[in-house]
Length: 148
Image (cartoon, rainbow, N blue to C red; front, side, top):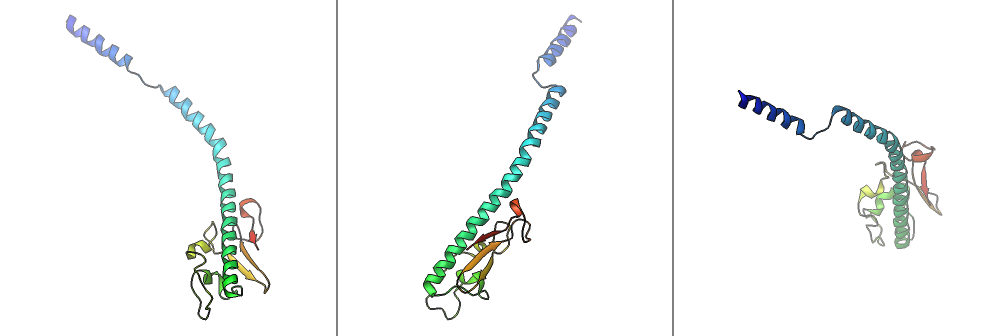
């Protein structure tokens, strides 16, 4: 009987000696993570929109540079009917074309996956994007981007 009592005491002591966290400690950690997330996530989302806007502007500038190379080789700007596709695929009847000026059709899309808008007025051109919302105007990430 003395042996049984001794084994019970050993088992009870072993359970008490196990390291671990209490429920209260776990709840405190979860609450702290929640508070940090409430502050950091909105700021991160705002930065994501700004980053996409900056990336779209850089992409538009790259496309504008390709249009200028096309103009230098061919003596004219692409027409609006030809569009920006002439930067990737050789059009019929252009002997001066030394492209592709852009590697893929995917590079002719903005950060939101919509094609850049190309406008040509005879003496110049504009590459633009309607921003995150895809509508004219807007502020922040929704702001339109235009490169001439």
